[in-house]
Image 1 (spheres, rainbow, N blue to C red):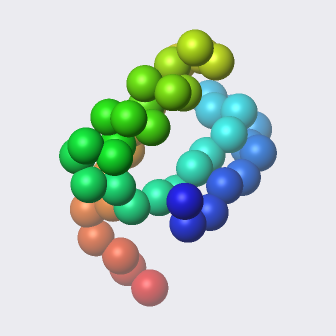
Image 2 (image 1 turned 180 degrees about the vertical axis):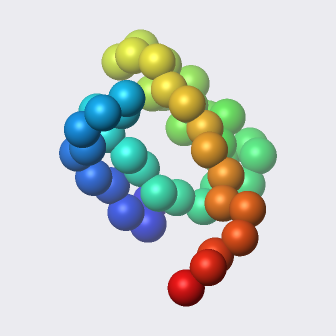
Length: 47
C-alpha cells in the first residue's frame, strides 16, 4: 500500500497501491466482507 486516506463524497476511503493481478485479487477478496469497492486506474500523470 502506497497511501490511504479518509475522504468525502462518493467514497469513504481511498487506497493508493500497486499490485500485480494475483495480489490485487487476494486483497480485494479480503476487503469484500467489509463493503463495496471501486477500482480506478491512472491514465496519465500531469504534474
